[in-house]
Image (tube, rainbow, N blue to C red; front, side, top):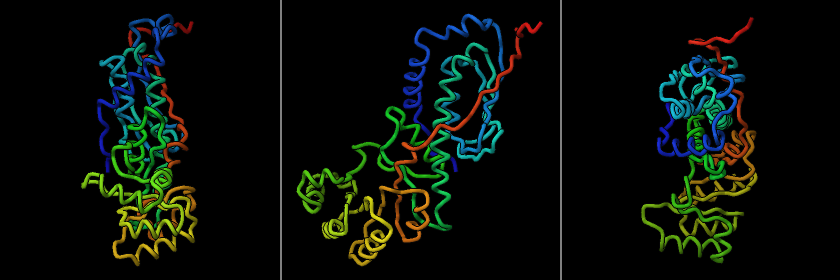
Length: 295
């Protein structure tokens, strides 16, 4: 299944900032070394196994430099590529391709890294598990839209996008309000009726408070496996069984156990803040009006 599409407005905003950062007064090397009529064809190649995400973003980078550059995808976002697999072809003005190359690769490598790490976590879920692997707001500043898309491409789901997206009472909110019960009661009085109320709890005592106060979603923060199992037992015995989310300390090795216990949501900040850029290269050849002097 293809991930939900990116907003072109968000993508263009990110690309404009990235190009401005890299170009400044232009590409002095290409301007002085590459003849203006040179035409190049290139292939984007996976240098390691990866999950693809962000081809449309890379394409828009080349188009922003020169709309005449032809970008041909050879695979779809969400696909698993083996080492050496071609992901796309690029053809056009050699100058334009070289100017766009680094920015396109930086964004693509980052997005594929997030998608690849997400897929590893999704694949760790037991067969037929109903648990969701989600991201958090621990995204790269300015790149949240791309990070979140990459999570979706990897098979994961998105948590709230920003502070206005949902009511999520964290430990510091509880501290300011004077307790879980007071925080949930205040949220119930003032939040829009269309929003569910989620509350983070630090221990089983706070869990009991959140259950009694009627939280719609309860986040178990930094609970070990034994405490998660007990929390789930209490939730199932309650009159109103809320959605149970686990966060904090979620290593890849814990995913199967937590999912088997019956946790609904596993929120993993590392999907975005811990992902490394994967290795993708643009292999170029000159094909057009000019060829290098090799004599």
